[in-house]
Image (cartoon, rainbow, N blue to C red; front, top):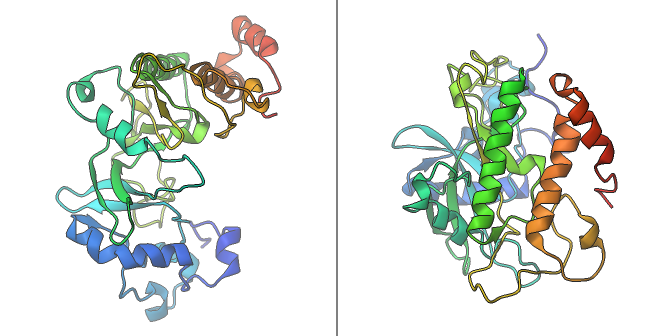
Amino acid sequence: MSSALTRSPNTSIRPPEERSEAEQRWVSFQPYLHSKGYRLRPRYQPDWIPSWTTTSADPYDCEDSSNSLPLRRLDATRIADELQVVIKMLIPSSNDREGDQELEILQHFSSPPLKNDPANHVVPCLDSFPIPDVEGGMFFVMPLLGKYKNPPFYSISEIHDFLVQIFEGLEFLHKHDIAHCDIAPANIMMDKSPLYDQPSHPYHQHLTLDAKRPLYPKYSRSQKPVRYYYIDFGYAVWFKDSTTPREITGAVGKEIAPEQVREVTYDPFKVDIYQLGAILRRDLIPVRSLRFPVATHYAKSFPRNINR
């Protein structure tokens, strides 16, 4: 029987029983995170014994053999209600503005009255607490989400709902004077739990929780609507002062707009719109159910130098 887990280039570098430096860091935080009410997977327990060492199983058939590349974030389970979550490290840096306003922005949108606004598509901040012995460092907790296009769209109505939500969410951000500055496919996620009758593995989300079997959706988005969220506000800018010029400098993020290439100030709100348009052009226009004249016309007229 072939393994359900993927043997990534990373796992071929070191044996699966050897935890990486990034993993070891999370292991060191495990007792603290547990005291805060969060349980890490077996691989991240200090007393972990690889499950395959006590059986004849192939390591790559075992859930705990997989290194989930946890540089700054790792999945966990909230002990109180078994909710699958993601814990992210926020560590200040004098060399990069990444994360400068991230937690403040998430907490702002996770507090009443904005928390309950249906137009709010900012990923909720469920909890936050200091990182031990890291000056200014914070952990913050968010719900575990999935890629917005997995499982794929099956109808125009599903795509329409996606577009309505992400446009609504971006308008909501801008209305509250915040530019995301890093809109990319990886930073638009969905709560896909309504589509399934059991939880997925947190890292290998195409597999069951024990990572032994493929997991397929029970419902379509048309049957069980989902909610979409913007995540990763590490480069976001909040213009709190209405008298401050709404301009910044520097090329950050995964999608680079033409004005970011030149070393001049630019409007980050317009860049957000450009970045979102670039995603739609690449990810949605090729979708078979969207191949109609209007979409084709706009696809041809959209700027093609999006990655320059």
